[in-house]
Length: 328
Image (tube, rainbow, N blue to C red; front, side, top):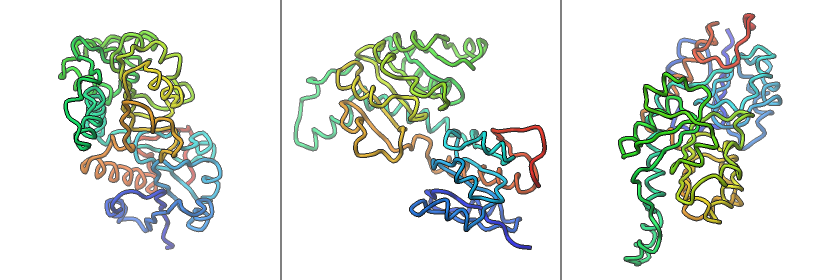
């Protein structure tokens, strides 16, 4: 029997032995595909039955290039880079991996960004290295006393973030999330509010929502106008939630204290991104999810979803379901 090909788009992990081990019972080849060359041409040549995908856009032209494609598996939670409706029209599974335990890493990263911005750690480090000393009091550092945390999105990661900030002394936690039940809010001592109220009251606004047409640029100039000058914005979710130009302008004008940003509208960050020169802003390279543990679990679960599809089962986290059975 002819072996089948599984394409890994935009490879970025240390190796793919985990995927090969999970899929070893099947007659498949696991092929990392560089995006330096024309992706459509490479896909046409490889003819994959499964695509494992990170951040690369995978829309109609890429899907059409895979004549025998049966499934697209996203390494991670967000699937905004995949045309899930078009895939559904062709009865191609799209699955993600929302349950690899990254709520621990992501919430830690959110807290770390907050503390680094609030305590101005990057500028303090830089000035010490420049042999400057005793200048810390020239720059305002806001107190955390009676601070309010505002969560935009309050799923697993949001709840973990709330727990960590509460341990730091945040007594009041607000959340804007239409999917957060009143019972869950009460059980976690979280106050449900609308977005305007959250932005006006929170000292820290931390984003943990998916990117959808409804949430695109949900944080823009209108929301920055509501924020206090002491507010810190944290985004460890999806770059498109924030209007980056409006954020850069707000930071430059002093409308808010600072920002910690792990995700961007376009990745890698382009040289003309205004956040690169924004004051009191800490930027990281979409690594909030990462640890040695989390990446192992992520690769294993993505491979397991591919295995399920290839053995004619529905993948565990199927995001574009249809009623009829897929092509065999």
